[in-house]
Length: 105
Image (cartoon, rainbow, N blue to C red):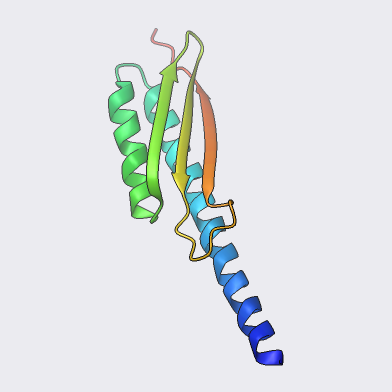
């Protein structure tokens, strides 16, 4: 009777760790893209590709990146799916990052 409860607790802890790792990875991917995009002369395509590489290295699946450069700041939104064994609707993640644009003088 106790064994299934222990196994459920262990699986839940592992799942939480995988979810948290995916969230941190997407945060790093968004920050990387925002940092690159804030530098004048960098294209949104290259910033999106960098975010894709960071997210893929962290094991996040189905990654999409949206990067835009405004007059004063850049915005990046990264979406992905955490590779959970049991998905209770929490595997889809979205993280955003913003950075000020570099000013050329």
